[in-house]
Length: 219
Length: 289
Image 1: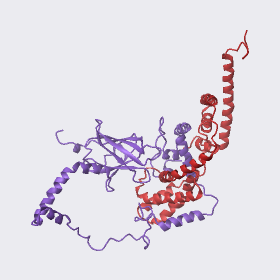
Image 2 (image 1 turned 180 degrees about the horizontal axis):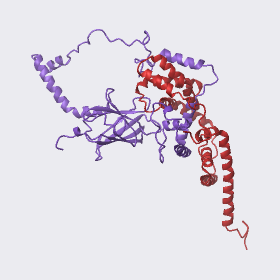
Image 3 (image 1 turned 60 degrees about the vertical axis):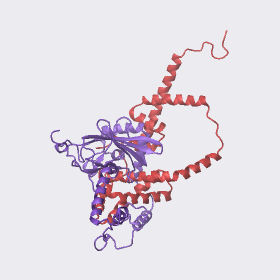
Image 4 (image 1 turned 45 degrees about the vertical axis):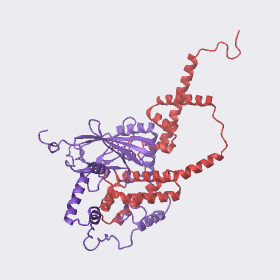
């Protein structure tokens, strides 16, 4: 079975560590060679945990602390792992919870820091309500036009325009290469321009011409 | 990738319909290209409209890739040395947060104390004597104490039952409950209910939430919508499960619903509806019913 994209998820096709983990977890739970099995699990998940915490924008010392804390939770709770999900997702769930709790503990200081820095900034000019409304209308018009794009182009455009993802992130979500993402976005953009130009032309046809030629006209 | 290569885990859950969220298990299957084409397409469509699931997918992707940085393994080795010093896998350290295990030979189980356990002193006898007078005989005292205990037991029965609902016991069978699914048995719908009538069991509830809550509120509802019990629960571990000690003596009917809410300060959000269905057993009902 293969995901439909041109490129499967890179790096771990057929080499994921769950089978190794399963044996280590089973040995660990039976109380056999705990330290040895703990080491196996540590080496399997060390870089994974670091990569996850790094992606969440944590500094290197924080990543180190979070990784250690996650391993401690994993080892302490391993007796409660019931094998309903893959061990990887179980470890991932613990890492998420560790990060959530850690962020909640840090939040007051971060909030205080943010308040101080934002307080020193000069007050920016309020956006013009008219331009805000115009932007909103244009965005709605564009989103409606995106809906008419072919499936892949539409999905790439939504991930880019609405969710604000980077090319490589879109490639991961879509399961395709970055070059394919660029191609889909380019084709989508061209098609959108064509669609919107057509709409603009239609509007010009339907709207009545101003007989006076604009302001100042009159008898 | 074939199902056999996935290991001894159940197949991933179905792609969520409508506005439901995809769980980590499903997203991981997608990343590992294990989903059939139709499911992958549906999930891709879901991701396009669901920033939360997209974010989790990207987190999982980072976790899956986990490429070692350009280092010679020194950091990993240092990480392991710190863990090995703390030995959090030792039973004594399990559940503790910062306790250093006592120094001792490796893998040696803790020794039980020598000799029989010390006999508990009967602290209640002097107290009862002071209450009823110095001429109280031990036999009378025992009789009185038994009667008092029985009366207290009867009077506190409701409280004990309520407490039993809230306090799971590790020696009881575990029953997994998932949102929007009828749980009839631990291993599948056709298997007999693993908890015999009258026995106690621990329901392990997986809240249907994107982000875990610090506390939950649960309601046990009978088929006629009568709320039998309500109480607050704290996830007792870091994997987000909520456990609830239940007794079939208390739940003598055949169908119940558990409603769960996540509580965060003043915020109260639905965290899933869990249906519990006991297989009809003749022993459940008294003769002649």
